[in-house]
Image (cartoon, rainbow, N blue to C red):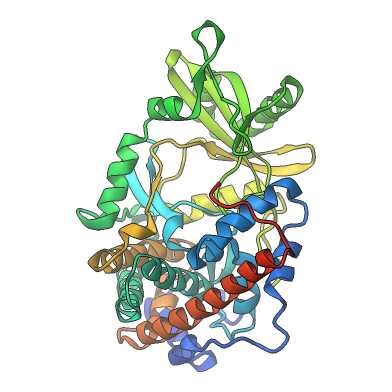
Length: 444
């Protein structure tokens, strides 16, 4: 990091350096947002970011973004990346999630089988300003809260809970050894909305996925059904190419995981439409069986395009392979990760490979009404602080954030202002659909 001496160990010096960054960007200034002169038309920004995607699927993306301002927000990382790049920054970098919002934290199974709650989407990850993740997560709380029927005063309180939890966690992490921090789990979810997410994940077993994602075919075998446009089995030639790409993927996981993969037999591949921001990318579901038809393994082979932040952070170095960039970022930010996380290349395109739907579950914005929004915000703040502390410097971050609620209030102002901007951008998308500039398929 520019400006930090090579020998920079004492905690008090790192705290002082973090505090000094307030001169570069006062904490109260983090709350400033207004649209800027020359801000590109949002439709032009979204269309530019969609180059290289499958054009026949983009109407599904626009339809999902048109569903609500929060839906728009989920697919509009390229828009927010440009907006954030116009704002002053502290100059302190971490591994950013890049798309931190309330539905990109969730539950999944750890390698030993226990369920954890953590950030679980890293398509946009790369090193960058820590405050961009906080701002995006804060704005998402307001948008999700509004969708659940919460008023802005409660949403502002929730953002305050998010940021105060983030600050308090950084204070704790700043005093930890690197080893203790690397092993630290977030366990603040004995009740409330996060507990409900974990209960959903408990039910999302491989056999549940087998029932949900496949149908009985000839000979009593299970295969992917044809449910266009969201799930479509591949013709044999394409399926073989996807399966063939998994040979290179195998080399990206550890030796012990290779032994597990070798015990499974690949049987079927389907094209699958996922998410909102990812719609239009090439995404494949792979079905394999191990010791009989009651032991399925689902893998996802997911195309990874460059991060939306690459254009606004051109001097930041990260892996040139998109799948490796995402896998590396995920390993860095999570305490435990999918044991089958890796990457491959197919027809010159970069792919992430991971388990599909293995004990995974997400929050529904409708669940974030009233007190649940604030409870969820506190857990999210601690989870994000852990990820940033693992990949940055907790003492420097805590030195900047401090013990008062000045940053909390500022992020609340930003979150409300940017949620308002998102609602305006969402209205512009609806107008573009209405006037025929783009075509949207809703309800898919």
